[in-house]
Each structure stands twice: as structure tokens, then as C-alpha cells.
Image (cartoon, rainbow, N blue to C red; front, side):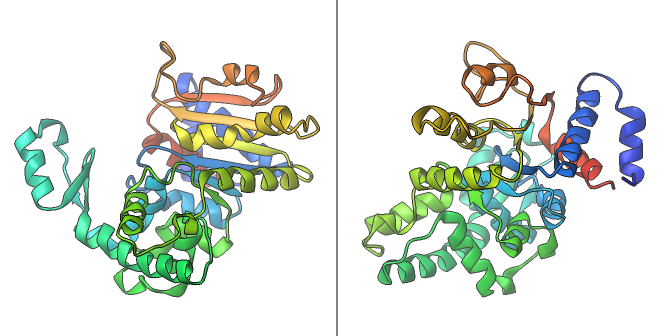
Length: 325
């Protein structure tokens, strides 16, 4: 594969320790795809607010990603950035903020995520207006959709197009909607839009709480997708961060093996995690790769990579390498 200047730089300089793991994992990712494999990417933390769409969207467009698991925050925050980018505020000296500084941000409806703030009125309430229209219409028609499907419907309808403040090619959710990519959003209730939905249900504006489909249904959908896809492709797992975005979907394999008595279903065929967490007293969400073998999530011979670094630095570089940039 042709290597562009970024790939050449990485190959020349990234020779040891976590740097070498970046190259090894990226090359194994490419081999997995070249051999006909499919890949899941999981998004934890605040990767959408970190604007990962700048690199992830192209990965989706070039069929380097086949399914995504994202927290509810990452799902919605890609849209927040799409429609309110110019109202975000960068806080380069965020470590020096006092409690009074934080209160002043609250009073201006600027919700802080490390070094940037998300504007409530321009991002959250603007999306809420479009969502409540979709939620109430589906509720009245006795239709039910997953959280990501409601956002797909909004993006495809053009309801928010007039508010776009970045090039939509830099939105990973826009790219996913164009590909109709399957997305799993475990624990969506633990998100701003999930809280909005609960509020509108409590107000009686939505009569049927299950108008938005649940996490259990997401697992059932994922199981069907995994069984069908694994008949033709080995499926890899590329995990950014820890938490439910990774823990939930990786469990589909032991569930199929142990709870559904389907030992014929293959385990994940590739695994890589980028995380700056360290193993200590059970605090490592999701566990390190070898420990996953004991849970039936990975096999002894599954290619496994652990990159202990900042995903906002590493993931875009890996994606560039995989794309040959």
C-alpha cells in the first residue's frame, strides 16, 4: 500500500514502546481488512468533542469501519459540534479554573469538557427541538427506533442543515448515516439526549417510554449482526478508551457461546485498545487483553494490542496510517 508523508513519518520514528505498538496495531488492522475482515470501532470518553470525526469520517467512507459502538455522549456530541461549532469556547488554561470560574461558565450555559465548552442553547436545545419532533411523531404512529436511528432520520431529513457550522464531511455520524452503518449505543439513557427523552416522557409529551428502543434490544441486534457477519468475515475490535462503549459489545461473543450455546460462532479476530488507564485493584474498565481470554471474549491466538497513551493523539495517527496518508 502506498504510504503518504504521515505514514512515512510514523514508520521512521515510531520504533519502540507505545510508538511501536501504534505501528504494529495499525499494520495488523490493515492486514485484518486485507484478509476480508470487518471491524468494530468503539468510542468512549469525549472523542466526538475532541472532533475525532476529522479522521474517523474518512475511515467510514473508505470502508475501514463496519460497525460502531458509542456512548450516548459521543453519538450526540458529534451532532452538537456539527450544528454549534462556532459557539464552542476553547479554554487552554482549564487546569487553572477556580470553582467561581466554573460557576460563571454554567451561568453562560457553557458546559465544560476538559478544555472546551459545549453551548447548551445552540447545541443541546437546537438538537432537542428536532428530536422531540421525531420522538413525538414516532410515538403517535406507534413506531419505535434506536437512538442512532432517530439521529439518522434527522440528518437525512435536512432538518438541521441550515445550522451546520463545519463541513459535514468532518462529521463521523453524517458519514455513518450515508453508509447506513450499524451503530450500538449502550447506556444511551446516560446522555444529555437520554435525559431530555426522560423529561419529555415525564411531561406526558411522549406516552410510550419504549418509543426509543432499549439497550437489551441493541444487544439482540448486535448478536444478529455478529452471527450473520461472522459467517463471511472475521470481526475485529478497535477500542478507544474503556467503559460501556467497549465492555458492552465485546460481551456479545461470550453471550453467544455461553448463554445461547453457540460455540460455532468465532471469537473476535483482532483486538486493540488505546487507553491511558492502568490496571489496579479492579479499576481497569474492560480488563487488559489477556484477561479477556478468561471471559471467552478473545482467543489465545487473537492478535492483541494495548497502546497506553492519549487516544486524541494516537487514534488520528493510526487512522492516517491505515488510510495510507
